[in-house]
Length: 112
Image (tube, rainbow, N blue to C red):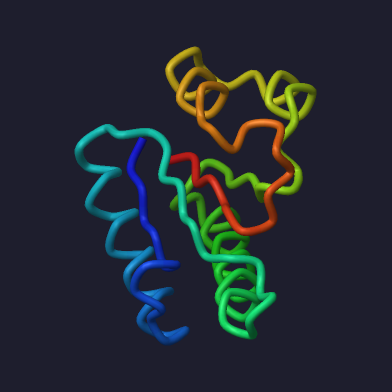
């Protein structure tokens, strides 16, 4: 799993979205299948904007078939993961993550 941690760098919204798109392009070519983005949930006024706009952009990328899916951290449950019938490699990467079942709104998982 690839990790992008905005909680360490606190980029602007435009920089954050651009970085995610660059990483999607980069890792899609190398066959890594999951990108975990730590963006925060907005309690300090920073992560919330990135979280909302990142997910809006991921929805567009999914509709354009540039990514397969994305899972908001607060929606990450065993039932959700199992219902998607992801390949074993993808399932295991997410299932074994420390944020599995934590319902953490400060993370988003991108399925390439």
